[in-house]
Image (cartoon, rainbow, N blue to C red):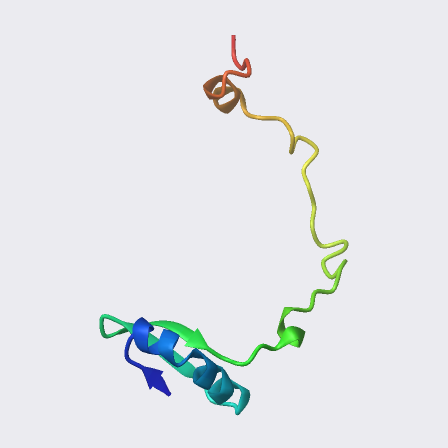
Length: 80
């Protein structure tokens, strides 16, 4: 379903949410261009698995050390 304006979407929000609950996707336009999509919320899509990259990410020993030129630019000393 396509809604032609945000004003129309505001006026019909309850009906649009009902359409989404029935499985429909709602596209909202502004000035004739699609700007938003209402779709059913899927909590499973956002589930994270902590530690999924364990052993695959390496942080260099000098990670916390700024290069001299950048440290100098931030007023934190640097090359002398």
